[in-house]
Every structure is written in structure tokens, then in C-alpha cells.
Amino acid sequence: MKNIHSVTDKALYDALNQKQITLNEIQDLFLERGTIISKKTPRKDLARNYSRMTHDYYEHQKIATLLGGQSRTEKNTCVRVESCVDKKDIIEAAEKLKNQITAQDDYCKIIVDGARVLINIRYLSTNYGKSDFKQAINKEALIEIEPIDNGYSIRRPDNENLQDYEELLLGHISSIQKDKVDDSNLDLKLNEISLSHNNSADVRTLFFDKLIRTLDGYELEDVTDAYVYHPKPETIEAEEGNTETGVHVSRASLKGEGVLKSDELSDLYDRGFYIWENKVEGQGKIGRSRYF
Image 1 (spheres, helix red, strand yellow):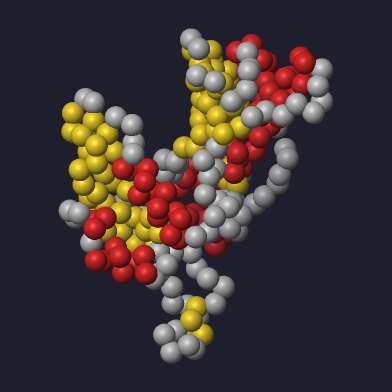
Image 2 (tube, rainbow, N blue to C red):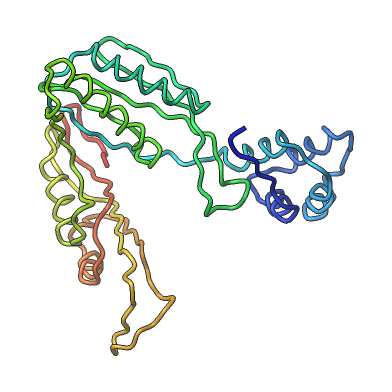
């Protein structure tokens, strides 16, 4: 066992008062202990009585699963390896990654689907900024590796755990390539679109504006939804020049017709907001459709 952790009575009480856990599920928890409860009993009373009991690891895991079972679908990100790489080298690198993952008691399976190589991973994601029962969540993810005109594309969920796995995979691919050509200075040529190095709201908005207007195979008709973001500055200045604390709007969304041309969106631009997601209606090769 790599980590030993026991939640407090207060954390258990708070967890059972969450709406994610239904009364039927609380009833099952008591029934496993040989206790029959009435659904008319207030939830707080049930949580208070249950939290006073002794609990083991498996009960904690069950409650954590009930709380963490409704995780949001994560966005994907993609990097292109624009180097001469063989499929067998990709598989060899994937096998090395699998060995590292399974050594940490996580699950990993490699699937060869035609020209594609898929890496299925089940891992434990930790976030110690959350409540005790949400600090560790079991997740499942897929790394998709498929050939393109000048190399391979690697697609994965956009989170820190999968970023680490991707870096390990790319490191293995690079090492295999260096060994083949006997050149320790050989580097993989990677192509990745990233705005992380540019904090300009105007540049980020311009990127999305050009993207939706120049998508291959689509003709822009309308933007129906626009989601904008404004990162919190170190200090917040009031209009009179005085520094305030605790007042900052970081996200906003606009829905309707012609949102991209609206005065409301222009006002948000002037305040330092930038677009990070759109819902667009356009005419594609297979007819009219909505895309993001």
C-alpha cells in the first residue's frame, strides 16, 4: 500500500449530505451493517449516525466512488510527431510506457486497431485541494496514435496525468529513434498548437475568430454561443483607482444570434475577456451542422 489515509468523522458526515449520494444508496450502506432505516428519517440524522461508526478502506472507496462517479468529460488535445517513425517503434514505445504504468499498480492495455495504436489507461487522479472523498478518483483514458501524411498524431485528454504519460511516450519514441540511427543529438520534430505562452486577450480571440472562419470543409453561418474568460489579475483596480479585493468576474457566456457581432461581446473584449469556446452553425460537406 503506497498511501495510508483515514477520513475524519466530519468529512464522512459532509459526504453523506451531498446530493450525489441518494437515499437508496445510504440505505444500502446501513443495510450492509445489518441496519434497516426509514426513508422518512432526515438525511442529516442518518449521516450523523453513520459517521459515528467505524469504517474500513473499502467503505471509504465505495463512498468516494458514489461522489466521484459523475465526472465531466474532459477536452482532448493533440500533438503531431512529424518525424519518420515506424509503427513498430510506436508499439515498442507504448510497451515501455505500459511497463511504467503497471509498475505503479495502474492498468494499461495496448490495442492495435489497423493503422492506429490505442493505449487504454486506468489510473488514480489525486487533487488534495478537494474534500477528503474527492481527493482521489479512479479515471479511465485513451491515448490515440494514428498515422498522418508526415508522421503520427497523438490525441489524449487534456489533464496533467495524461500530459505526463504523453511526455514519457514521446521520450521512449525519441530514444528508440536515436538508437536506430546512432545519433544521440537527434530530436523528434513536434507540431503542437498552444496559446499557453501568449497571455494577450486580443491574440487569443483573434486565433478563435480566424479558426472558425477558415475551417476546411465548413462555411461559417452564425455563432450562437460564445464563452469568454478573464483571468484574475494579482490586484483588482476599481474605476476610481482604488484597489479592491473579492470582486472579479472570470467567466461569462452569451447565447443568441449573431453573438460574434454583438455589442455585449465587444464590451467584454474591452474589459479584457477573450473567447475560449464557441458554438458555431455552418454549412459543411454533408449539410448544415453545428460544430464547436
